[in-house]
Amino acid sequence: MQGVRTMERFRTRTALLALTAASGLLLTACSGGGDAGESSKAADRHDYSAGQPAPAEGRDTDERDDRREDPDHLSTFALDVDTASYDYARRALADGRLPDPSTVRPEEFVNSFRQDYDRPDGDGFSVTVDGARTDDEDWSLVRVGLATRTTERSGERPPAALTFVIDVSGSMAEPGRLDLAQESLSVMTDRLRDDDSVALVTFSDEAETVLPMTRLGGNRDEIQDAVSDLDTQDSTNLGAGVETGYETAVEGLREGATNRVVLISDALANTGDTDADSILERVSGERREHGITLFGVGIGSDYGDALMERLADKGDGHTVYVSDSDEARKVFSEQLPRNVDLTARDAKAQVAFDPETVEEFHLVGYDNRRVADEDFRDDRVDGGEVGPGHTVTALYAVRTEPGAEGHLATATVRWLDPETRDPHEETGDLEADALDDSVWSASRGLRTAATAAYFADALGHGDHDLPDAPRLDELADQADDLADSTESEEIRGLAEAIGTANRLM
Image 1 (cartoon, rainbow, N blue to C red):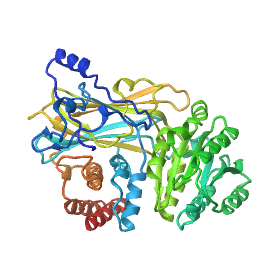
Image 2 (tube, rainbow, N blue to C red):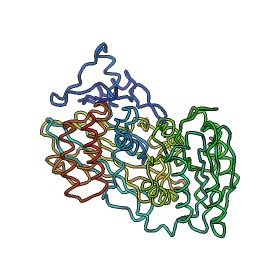
Image 3 (cartoon, rainbow, N blue to C red):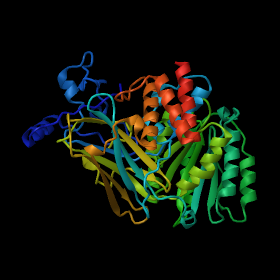
Image 4 (cartoon, helix red, strand yellow):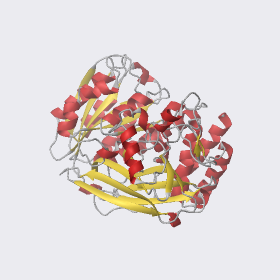
């Protein structure tokens, strides 16, 4: 069960070293989506009001100790801008059913909402750290916010070479699948620049390149015709599609361009290789040598969420999910063009909590993105790829020392320049007196992040375990108030989804 990671404050350097040597408590590196080891899994659910970990049935103290947060007060993870989990949950709720808790990833709920963090002038990140207290004694929510430059300089981006890998299996015949993909690709073709290029690969039981890498300038009609001619066939050999897609991308590789594979599928693989690690291992050379990243677009009411999410994580990319024409136009007209350009490669974040003021903490979500603390500055270890216009938010549940004053935490983000691969870092700090008195009176951004996280926690049956979690009907009221005060359509959509979930539960 996903829950709270506990960690004791160690009073002396000797005790710290002794425990470190005895337990070897290092977060297992998952560098872009590998499964975390047992020591990086969440510990048992806390009684936040008591501030103590609840003992697990059948689990002794020594085993709980082995699941504590790393005793050096560090938390390290690869950046992730996926949003598919939230959009798929909304689709399930709109269909009158609750999403499977295994598909609920709270960081993707939180990152579905743009934040108003300060933006850096050039490539790289700004770092914002803030927080607010909860009604559970000494527990707060701390928000770490990272932002890249805006997309206003889109004319300066390098040309794009995009290989679209399109699922044309029988399941894609359902309305809202292949037809939605075709509509989206048509819109995308109109929006790309003349110096951009696209290729089309289709797959069912086999894969086929139906259009080699083709410049947009002077060829838009040919590309639109190729999109219109797409038709569904038989089974789903997703592995063959990805492999052929990468081969096509390498054949049409453009130096100085952003080369990316865009996978559009319901990810219901049933033929050939269906394991994400095995599929990507076959194209690992292309990915590493040429830096070709993967952008996954999920479609369909029945959707292979786990496979698509793992493919994107391991493929140095990320995923979105679309369920209707409006969402598809947003993804292909706004999000994908924004992701054509990269401002950072292998980006990781590390938060250092001050042992003098912080008693206990845990990161909400990012379970498949945890990185071993000692790998933070090892640039051979994969991080996340991030483009312009992105914000990345991480929430922490933090229990401070009673009456804590002074420094609480320092957040550092490290990334590689997309062209030179030179490393860069930026930091931000949080002091105890900067905590807002209440989550619900805090800034719009923090309230939105908290609402989204609490919603994910409820849909996940409390597995993500947040302090002072409201009942779902109370959260619906908070979301309604937030939507009214901000007049935000996306927050109104969040409030409606919470209301629907409350009725279904």
